[in-house]
Amino acid sequence: CVAGRCRGFPSFVYAHVDSEPPLVAGFAVGGSGELSPLPGSPYATGAVGPGFDHHPDGLALCGGWLYSAGHEDDVIAGFAVAPDGTLSALPGSPFSSPTRVYGLACAEQAALLFATGYGQAVWRFAVAAGGTLSESDLGPQLVPSYALGIDYEPIGELLLVASHPTQLDGFLLYPASGQLNELPDTPHLVGDGIRSVVSSPDGRMLAFEQAAGARIGVVTSGGALAFGPLLADPSDCEPTGLAWSPDGLLLLAGHRGCSPPEVTVYAVNAEGG
Image (cartoon, rainbow, N blue to C red; front, side, top):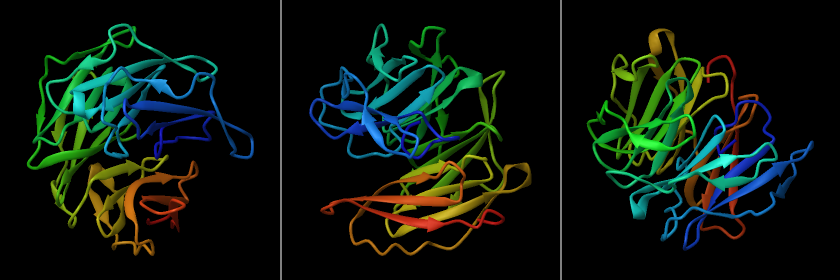
């Protein structure tokens, strides 16, 4: 899995390394959750940097491929994932993008990779049989604000977009055509500083990160969203991403700028978020 997007207990975990040039680190997950670096990790992306600006939604697994956002270079790096979890660059990687790339989300059944780039659009890339990327003929999906965070929830076929500074946008994907339809009552005005969004493993809930903390939303019938109150965060450090536990009963919020780094853990009511 990639940070925050685990469905079931993972065998491997991948994360960005904040370095110049940018790298992706890979780890094998042991039976009790311990992490061991994969052979050859960290892996070069082919981008030149500088780093990833700590954006938590900048990695996406898509079947047997892993994609990495290289926002300063307007590229997306692609890797083949071997059975032992090790990564190797796809032919033609890194792939060019018409915009900077911050967040990535894969709709595997539609063979589409969605990308945000701090513009008023979500870009579609067609994923070929060998994992190579090309800009989709469908073109970008316009959004009313600056798209940063993104996640795709495959159970309900929902594309969720965190649009800076205050909006959460939701779309229903039609996999056969790749078309997106905006959900009812969206965009939602959810408070200042939204930058990341991640759906729960069972698809019934989502969480998004704001400057002042995190909030949880519940996906109701027809794809409508209902939101709970802001979750108070005791850390004084800058938030840098959210993750669900594989059972969806814990929400973890990471922070940078602390020594050592801090993680806030919330227990989640499985019935109503």
